[in-house]
Image (cartoon, rainbow, N blue to C red; front, side, top):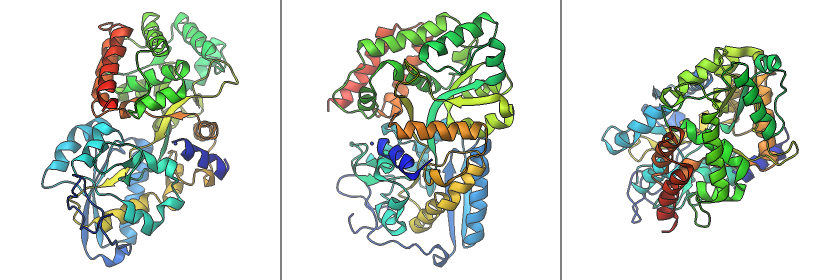
Length: 446
């Protein structure tokens, strides 16, 4: 991929003089007026880091980077606490309000997490460190916007910088090559071919699509993939960023909800999917059970290890083979500095280290998709090549749309619970969309 290609990705992903941790009049937390970047000269420091890099390739890259950081800066000791996405989301809010808050955390970009933490003054603006470390040379504004908020937490995508991500993400279709071959089916080039492949898999006694929705959030990605086929990309972006000017209660969104329900009616998902966890579902796919899996690129290393050359990855197809793709994606969870960090300069040095060009090489070698310097990496053949190519296509064609739970401070819970009800036939498509519209309109109307 060319650098211009990655620059397009980022295009799509479209300071008071106070001490760290002091409260600004707006209720946010002000950036320091001066910062230090010589980590070796900071004296003995202990940093507690919370992240959600628990799966194979994710854990491997963090383990290696922490090892290298401490070798380079023996004066800074890292205590790393690794939690699953769900555990981190559940515990982080309470931890940040306590007296023993971690120094560095991965915080979900959306308003329900990062936005609320910014509003409460619990994260430090990183703008002065961004200048000192020249992060803008590695991360264009179109990427950094996903970690920007106004100091009061109300405006998403503009304002101060509160985090820095390591990875890029695309939600697409993993598929079992052997099973498609046995079905006499090629990787689908159109949406109709995809649904036809699901039908053929069902008829042949296969599980057409592995899906585990006990955690509620996985359905957001599955619904988003269906929505991307029917709703204009600009409308999805407006909804996902919680901006006024769009509506959930439209014929296109109704069509998307009805399509998802039809997949339930046709038996395209595994039995008991609403009561199965996300990890058991993709692990089952990795054992050869299921033809397709809608999931993100973060599973690359684990599924490569489990299935080898039997697994492929592609962007969800459009109405026609040459249709411009629309795909859910963006950045991974950014790393942020809490307002109670014992040494914010050391925390910033850690974030700089794990997002450096050398770090991006380690991410690539451990089966991850780096968000910076992507074009400089050599993706291994097989699944990694599929994923790098898919990300490059999504970027070059300006095809990425944000995650739907970003929309409002309560949308993560609202859409997750509502999708469980929709899939369980406890709510009709119209009732489902009315619930989302109520949440969205209350926020976007303010």
